[in-house]
Image (cartoon, rainbow, N blue to C red; front, side):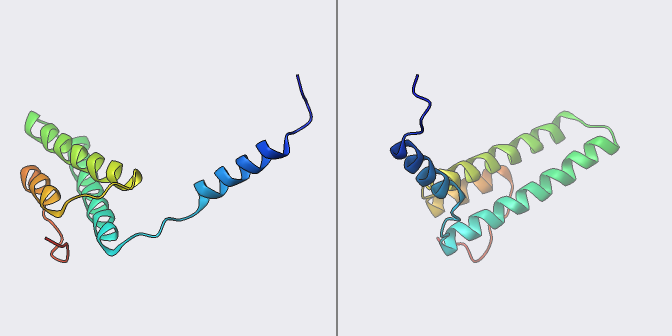
Length: 106
């Protein structure tokens, strides 16, 4: 087993590290999507706190699940740098009973 570090491996590691810590350049549309995701997480927190403080019913659990699914979709798309079509996002938000930011295109 070779214990002497390989210069090429070190360079690849440094490139990977640099790639991981660089902050991506977000477009205005992506920034709006991130802000809407943040608002969903705040709403989820409110629902979860109401469930903690009082009786939780099936309807409340389903609302929380809808919010979680929408949040997962938006964050997964942003993390993988996929473009979300505005109409798709609007339909998903409408189905979940969420409000789309008025500045959002489409």
